[in-house]
Length: 295
Image 1 (cartoon, rainbow, N blue to C red):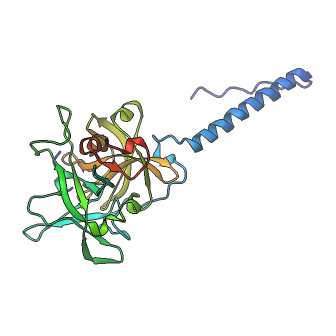
Image 2 (cartoon, one colour):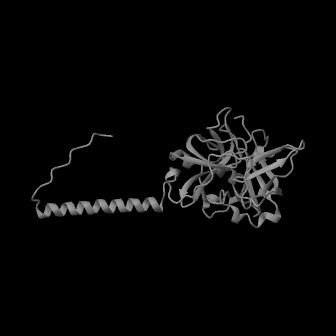
Image 3 (cartoon, helix red, strand yellow):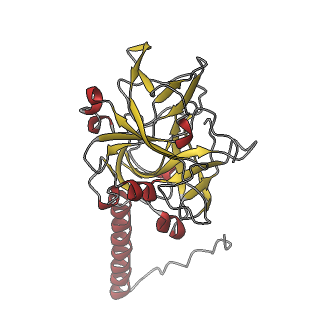
């Protein structure tokens, strides 16, 4: 990975008897009622327990920005999906996307993004608010950072791959708003975290929201216990984007953090799985499900 900026033919109908016996007619009624009951139960189950593997068909999901090519993206405040940047010593700016919000083991509000978004010598990361995009606001400071080149990795890699992530301790002046700001693009509420075992047993469609290209979705094609790859578009600046599976009713399950794409493959994107990152750092997302807790 080199980019880091980131049917059977129809059957004839059965003949209808002209004088059906009463008990035969009754059987038809009973069978029809049974079929109707099954259909009703099926519909109710689909609404109450939506299948998280087909995001495009999930009910009540608000549309968010997609198919764009933004230079920058701000919301009312910092939220997952907003643009963040850090100024370098040569007055260059390195841009990424904010992934998820949560707390570290001590309860301090934190944010996640890609590890390669922290370049040595850069200033602390900043964002802007939609009401004033000309004024940068310092988001906080990088604490735990891991990339492919990190010698002593926080997330054990073995031979299956490597995690690219960074933890940002949110500035105390902004920390109080962290939980209220935790919805992706200010819309999608994270209610659980999906791990490697889920990817093994399901035909998953994954989505991401990046500040450059917005929301794009595609089928998961490869994965291991630390990373996942999907056929979805991303661009430079989308690094750090939150990856998720849509559950319906504006709820999503968090999956990972965008780390990049293979050379020349903008329609193939790789992510670091979030579950092992939460476990290794003892961090927690702002959601109540046990999977949201790393400890």
